[in-house]
Length: 305
Image 1 (cartoon, helix red, strand yellow):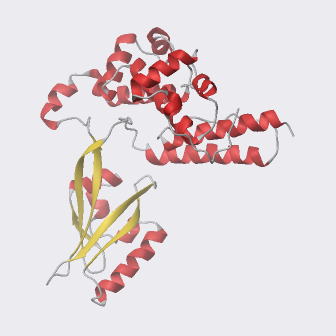
Image 2: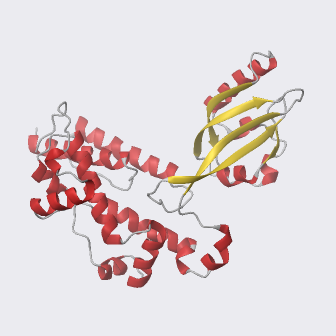
């Protein structure tokens, strides 16, 4: 067994899992010629990352990498047999259906099999008057047959046959303000094609945090655009410059690696693209207010380099 190669694959999987925990599903671990259990794990980790990226980003929206501030209440009105009688527009935007696809159709049509079984228990409880309200997690099927998981409140109304199903949809804080819709339409950055371009730049940066950041000229050439559009578009969606985003993400990943592993600090500095440790330590302290050696480390970890 090639112990050095095994250690490299273990470190690569650690890094991959760190990135997935932070919401970056663009990285992939290169496959090797080894046919062993570690290589099987590499394949599985790559598959999980691919599946999660497809499930989470299927709508094609830019990941704002920011907190969620605005919420929309989604409501469905169901009859006693859980057939859909009415709903608010938010439900259409979540699942991607047209209104005619939903009205007078059973809710079970738009649920996974497991969620359908959960719904049957709710039907029986309501029918036997054991309960008038419950909270259950349901998995809806979008029009593209992707799974949308959400915790739902199901309430039986007093003196009525109708049942109300509701859940909350979160929207990113940098969502477009409808009041400024006309102004936003004038900005080329708000177009969907530009949003997809900036998403690719975002994914590229997160996938290459261990490498020096290319110049704006090289980045724009790589993505087939110009420097102004790239710089202005990134700032429009992420409220920061490309360089500041790149630096902040490297430091966040380094912080997680320090906290969760026993990899030497100098190695962590190099793994996150810093050419020398003093520069890394200075940037780290500026970002987090403490130096790298002040971060509490996970003594249970046995990962070393």
